[in-house]
Image 1 (cartoon, helix red, strand yellow):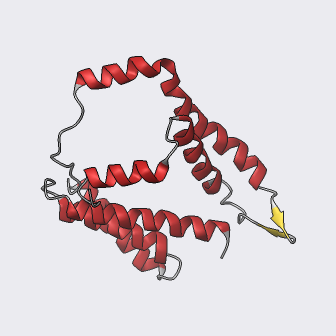
Image 2 (cartoon, helix red, strand yellow):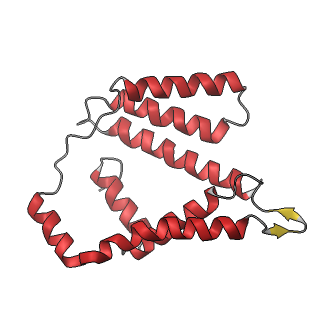
Length: 167
């Protein structure tokens, strides 16, 4: 398994979790279609290399139809108020842009670095795919710079807020 295969598996698992979260969200009137969209996305990322090309094409068309015909919905749970968002924005100031700028920077630098990164004479990232791993690293760098020092605690609290956790 290459790093890219592991990355696809990890993203597929994330999409599967998103499908489950959507399915459990009783306040989302479009939860079944949303869960279907994310579930199909998970299937493509996890099993796409084993499926025939026609099956992948059909799955992508179903995803496009689900999204294009209004199948994706949002939860009915209350969002933060305008006042809460303004307080947070004033507290962070221009530092809000650091995570957003780190993602493309790390992606660009990592793409150049990973193009020639080898282990025992074999490329760690297959040719033509050297952007995905740095993009994931850029995402992590952006989260780290954004103050997410405890990602598991943050994820657990966010998942429980969506009705998927035990809290």
